[in-house]
Image (cartoon, rainbow, N blue to C red; front, side, top):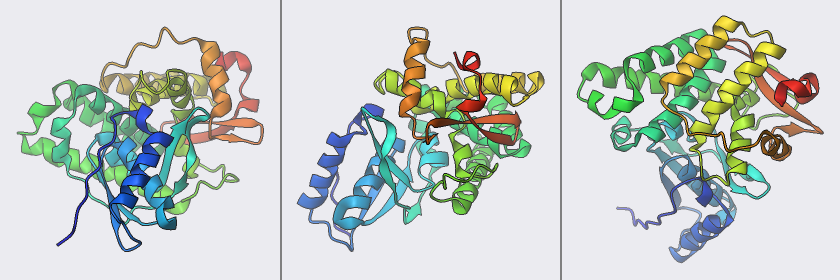
Length: 310
């Protein structure tokens, strides 16, 4: 009983930009959408972010629904209401808070994903497990030890696999929703261990890597994988993260799959890109580090010696 119009956008972070946003808004207008209509985001995080942003500013806001089809968007970007586009200024600096009216997750769509998309999603899962608690971290690690992203499609024939996958995704979504509920708009004064800011663990380096490669070299979650490794090393020197827990963190990240080579990227480029990070407050960049697995800590770059970063 619904009249449906379909618009497709380009694949990848490099298409989450003003040009695509303008095309989406034009499509809304040409389709005759009104305040009583809704937009459905069917796809990964890029599709969800751009659809949500377009829906938030078209007619000063129309409803939208998320139907995420990638692991990363299922457990992270579809839940929380952050919408945005990338620009020359940096990643996700231009956007709005616009909560979806619903999120529908069907894990069967994960059968269609290439290995890199799965790796990207599981890096995000490791991130959330690391900052949540030991239980979610261990659940994520145990799943990855038993079910490698390199052989993911074949596991769907096993009833036990589908049950564990559903449980893991449900636990990941519940954690993200709990954090968002308590700090929907990421209040900048908050610096406690349940501030929404902790969801940015691994993202300081990740956003810089994406920016300096023009959003073309990394899947977002792959960049987060490198960000987790870097944040762990910094946490050992600044927040007293133990070597054993650092080794464990590095091991679980390795279970997500091979990350793209980044040897061609210069450290100077990365440090320069930090200036464009949305986690800058005043004149100081905020880092999310770890005192231990399940114990995130917000630290400003004023408390991190420059030699540690470089």
